[in-house]
Amino acid sequence: MQNVIEAISKINDFINGLVWGWPVIILILGTGILLTVKTGFLQVTHFKDSLNSTIIPALKELSIKNKKKDTLKSVSQFEAFSTAISGTVGTGNIIGVISAILTGGPGAVFWMWISAFFGMVTNYSENVLGLYFRKKDDHGNLSGGSFYYIRYGLKNKVLAYCAAIFCVFAAIGMSGVQTNKISNTVYSAAISFSGGEVSDVVKLVTGIVIAVLTALIILGGIQRIGKVASMLVPSMSLLFIVMSLFIILKNITHLPAAFVLIFSKAFNFKAAGGGILGYTFSTIIKKGMARGVFSNEAGLGSSVIAHSASETREPVKQGLWGIFEVFFDTFVICTLTSLSFISSFDLTALSATADDTAMSMSLFSENFGKLGVGVFSLILPLFAFTTVIAWSYYGEKATEFCFSHLSEKHKNLSVTIFKITYIVLIAFSAVIKSDLIWSISDTFNGLMAIPNLICLVALSGTVAKITKNYFNRKKGMDVEPMLSAYPDLNEEFKAHTSKKNR
View 1 (cartoon, rainbow, N blue to C red):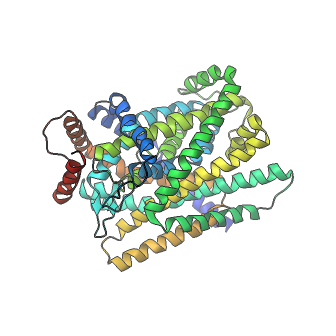
View 2 (view 1 turned 60 degrees about the vertical axis):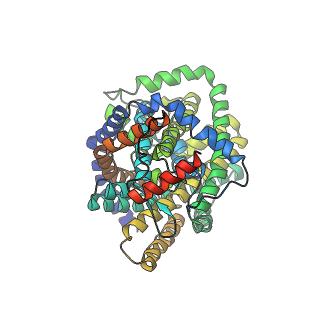
View 3 (view 1 turned 30 degrees about the horizontal axis):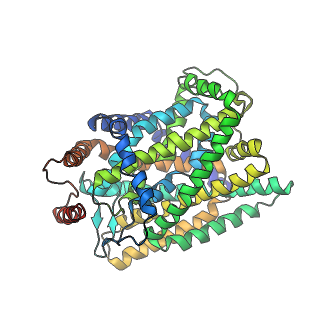
């Protein structure tokens, strides 16, 4: 078994080196820059619109009971957002950020911010294309994702199936990372509270519990996933924000130095030698970009799968959620983690090989004692768990797309096989070596991003047209709405939109 794991590790390291090489790094940044320019720096000029048409009305909507049910088998905009954000806000925002700082230095945080700034428009564009090219089946279910706009927008079957296949493996990899970190967190907490040695059986039991809970939720489809995510994500996010702000305020005198480290080490072209501050520019930017994409998923074409199930008929409206999603994920959650960690520890005394889960736990225990261990042991598993259930849906829809040419019976069988495999591997990943599961997940994330980014570049003009069309109509111009790429759906959505606005 050890030989098999070593072989897998070597193969993955080779592929990972290619996937996260400079060509892909440039492609990620280049795509974001191109889309930013073509949409007129939308993340800046329409950031206020993003807030006013997404999170603010959605929060008001939550207080309205007996909401009229939509004729589509869909989820509300907020539930779609919650599912998408639950797929992004997970261990990557806490342990992943700390891992990036440990292995790439504090300068990696700067490159997370850079990738997120342009990633806001990348994610926006994914959502716009996802809704514009999504399909509705005979049961009224809406399905979309990168593989849909690659297939029907770019009209490239090969790239579409590559995106879908990579999505299936990325889903398994992502769930593996989350489960692995949950089991390690529970294991560390057990040691902390017991004050002695704890059996590795704790990890396996944790994995089995997660697998069972995941099975119970994903059987209910996107509606149940959306409801669970909309309940857990806001409360956990708020708790984490409050705790992080407390840590930062407690170490407020170290905050200026933290910012100095982030910016001064972002362009460290020459290794200083020794300690965490001795990493080259190449390592810094790669770790920052890889963890940034892992965290906010802008460019992967993953969260668009959840957004495509939204009840809204306006692609741009749901696209604006993508801007807020990346902003919240990286500029709020990841930044709080970074500043908390850098201001709490002397980085020169840390080793790049330090365990990221243990250091994450230490961040809370150092500042809150046993209470911190307890809170961390609650926050991280719930964040990670919502990511597991969100990615189960992504993998399910990708599997469904791969076998869409089969009969309904065989297509459903294929989805069932994926779900069973996904659940079984959740339990197994709880005991896998930590760094290997991170690396495998990074690899499949990168592979999934490549066909998606190629398509985003090719359809950047379409994104710009749909965006201009929406804001022209907002200004009162009499132009034909661009709601769907398919004439029949466009007419249906147009009629619904007109009736809603009366």
